[in-house]
Amino acid sequence: MTQQKTILRALAGETLPTPPIWMMRQAGRYLPEYKATRAQAGDFLSLCYNPELAAEVTLQPIRRYGFDAAILFADILLLPQALGADLWFVTGEGPRLSTITDANGLAQLKPIEAIHETLNPVYETVKILSQELPKETTLIGFAGAPWTVATYMIAGKGTPDQGPAHALKAENRAVFAGIIDRLTEGTIAYLSKQIEAGAEVVKLFDSWAGSLQGDDFADFSIKPMQKITAAIKEKHPEIPVIAFPRGAGEKYAGVHAATGADCVALDDGVDAAWAAEHVQIDGCVQGNLKSSHMVTGGQDLIDETRRICDAFSKGPHIFNLGHGITPDANPDNVQLMIDTVRGG
Ligand code: CP3
Image (cartoon, rainbow, N blue to C red):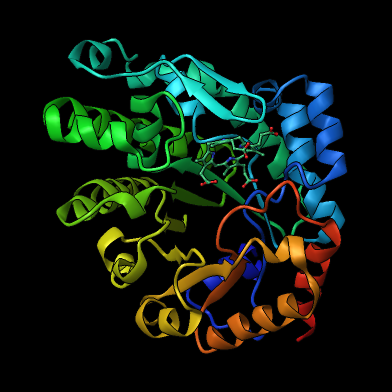
């Protein structure tokens, strides 16, 4: 029955005449209905922890556009919060966290079993969604990959070059590796609960993978994602995993095999024709239209959408952007992208 869902068919390796489509950050500030619900919730974190309202914003882009997948509305930084970090969002600036910089900070993190107390509302959102989504729509759960989440826990905020995390890695390898290991275990527990609540696919966001050079890419992006994927597949062999090592460039080649993921999500830094040859040969790919087309629209959007669909037409492909849609996007351009994908 579920294999009728186009996203699951693509993830199982099927080449479809029309790629299924969803969009990173599809529930977001470019939509007036999202802004209204967020205002009702009060702030972003209150929205994440309110199951009814989080389910509502997840459903909004499905109602408006009929995407083939819905992604759970939450954030990658809820896991560090559940492990004991303070977390808040500064309007117009982004996330802020208490920092971990030494063995003492690592020792103060809560044990893995304790995370669910904080994260229960997220599992509740998944349960509501698995009941309310149209039967053809796939529900995607997610977590941040350990490296990306660690960059925020160490710096206490987003950083352009992830400098503080690189510095800790160089200066105190044991503490750095301890944070990565704790996040790996926490992510396995978190995603397992999302799956038990009804998530049909899980995605790992390694948004800052691109700043890991040399062996570090294999050690701190690939290896933790491989461990998480293996643990998920041991418990839930039927659940597909999408890995998103953003900014990997040429190192995207081989990521399916190295992580064990069913699908590799591509950012817009790699050319679709190159990726068809070097990444899609190993399995399903997702991506990779530049998000800025959702702002600018027009013939360029149509041409680029068609070029990407053509480049990936000989293998399994899920259409998506290369990164999240931005708040300045025009909702009409999203419709134009969907019409172009579905209408040729
Ligand atoms: O894709 C989706 O719609 C699912 C929900 C989702 C959000 N964040 C909601 C969100 C997902 C999958 C994420 C992932 C996430 N969060 C990542 C990895 C993906 C990426 O974008 O690189 C990262 C690095 C974060 C951390 C985070 N959360 C930052 C840096 C920010 C602030 C940036 C901004 O756009 O303001 C957030 C906030 C956030 N997460 C928003 C949303 C819809 C905007 C919050 C708001 O409504 O004000």
